[in-house]
Length: 86
Image (cartoon, rainbow, N blue to C red):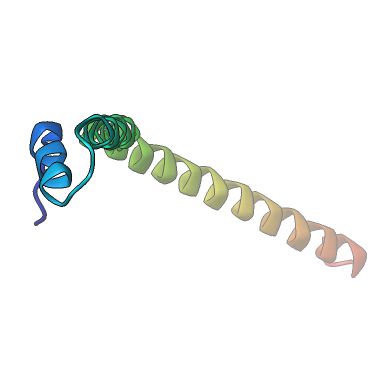
């Protein structure tokens, strides 16, 4: 199972600076990456979100089965009436 990793903007800035990027640019890039990492993390679903979604899907399936059963019964009743069986 993958684990969450944390982004270290100070290390990123130091790595960029060590690679020859100007310090101010390295810090700006590292901050932009940190902001992107935080924004993406905020969009992740939690276990509770997934549980709620599964419950919604299960409820929808039940409703769909009931509706399909009702429609099937209506079709059979109409067919029986059309062919004089009812």
